[in-house]
Picture 1 (cartoon, helix red, strand yellow):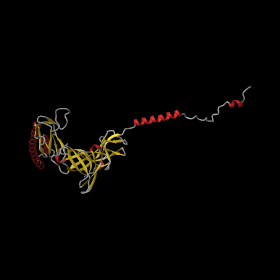
Picture 2 (cartoon, helix red, strand yellow):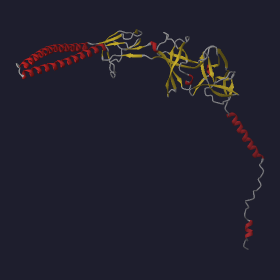
Picture 3 (cartoon, one colour):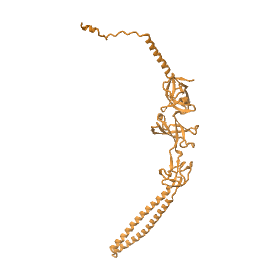
Picture 4 (cartoon, helix red, strand yellow):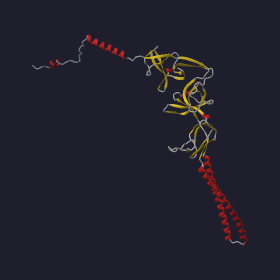
Length: 404
């Protein structure tokens, strides 16, 4: 008997009906709990460990009466007038009349060059000038005679005693002598200028100081060759000495461009020479050079001394403190922290502050440093804990453990 359609339909599986799930056995729950506990144990042992740091409480200091320091920087003493003195001509040095440390006046003779050949050329030019002048006298006498002859022939021609040819000849001789006299006068002028040139070259062999100052370097000795241009690796010197005008000394400071907004023209500055750390010299900002160094990210600032000190020498290192223009008697408040609490990161001064057991990075403004302490103008509040000792690789939000 063949199967019917109804019997075949009963053999199909009805997938629209979801079979009831079997209950999870106790062993499956135990495995899941074990996995959770194991994960917790792994996290516990691999979690970031708190950084061990030593902290110090920032304290507030109040001062009255003095100007407040806005920015500290380092710089060097420079001279606005400094010159390496050379000659206009190439020659051999005969004598050098200066030594290092000598003070010279404007126009003072520093050295002499050999002028033997130049003097010989000058004598030749003077002889040529004398010859030209003597020839001028001879021509002048001939011209005077020619003028007399022309006048006489003119009178005879009027009286009919001289021919027209004689009159024309007398006029021609007078005109020729007049032209010769003019040419000889021009030759004398040329000879005079030639003499002046040789005299100038002899004067150029005398090397003089371009301005008053102090000799800081002696570059040539008698017997050496000197030239105003480089000899290309030869033995020719390019200068006799270097002179510095001590009245033109000032300070050049490279200020980080992030802090240049704290510097203004005319701002008071306190200068401390590295050689004399206990002495402070008054100064003020002359100008802010309107360009930045893209390599160092700095702006150059010119600072002038209120009064020059004999101890100030070119290229000396120094520290400068840019002051505020606060009125006398005004109170200023600053924060003092250990010097080790201030670190350098990304070209800025920072400090790590511990807050609720975690690190917080703060950008700070350093006002001054003295001994083991640093004074901050901004960035940290009084009473906050700053990290004075700790690892160098601290990061924002790291949990810390404070050492006793």
